[in-house]
Length: 204
Ligand code: TMP
Image (cartoon, rainbow, N blue to C red; front, side, top):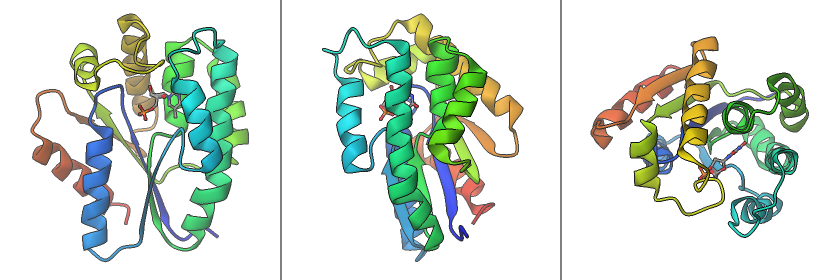
C-alpha cells in the first residue's frame, strides 16, 4: 500500500528544476508535511556512483544503449531503496526527474524506440507512476545558457536538446491529467513557484 504522494519535476536543461523543487519542498515542510526530496540519476549510493559515470565528459564513447541501461539501473535502485518505502510511510516524495526524462532524452533525443523504453522503464519502476508531474518548459537556447553546458549530457548538440524539449511537450500532450506544463522562459521565479504550488495542492 502506497499512502504518500509521488511528485516528479521534469524539464529540459536550465528549466530551473532544482531551484523550484527545493522551494516546493521547503514550502511543504513549513506546512508540516513529511517530505522526501531526491533526484535522478542519483538519490542512492549506487545511483550517485552511476550518475558520475553518466555525466563524466570523459566517457565520450558511451553507447546509446549503455546510457539507457545506466539511467534505468539508477532508477531501479532508487525506486526500491528510497521511493517505495517512503511512499509506504506516507511521505510526499519529490523527485527531480523520473521515467519521462528517459522517454524525452533517450527516446525523443537519442532516437531509441519508445516501445522498448516503455517496457524497460516498467522493469525499472515496477510500474510506479507519479501522481503529478510538473514539466518546467524552457526555450532550448535560453535553458542551455542558464545551465551553462558542463556535463556529458549538456554538451550534446543544440538539436538534441530541441528534440528533448519537443519530446517532453509531446509526452505532456498525451497525459494532460498527470502532467502540468509550466513555462519558465522569462517568467519570474515567484510566479512559476506559485503555479507549481497550486498544481501540487490538487494532489495532496
Ligand atoms: P540533472 O542535470 O537534471 O540532474 O540530470 C542529469 C542529466 O541526465 C540531464 O542532462 C538529464 C539526463 N537524464 C537522461 O538523459 N535520462 C534520464 O532518464 C534522466 C533521469 C536524466
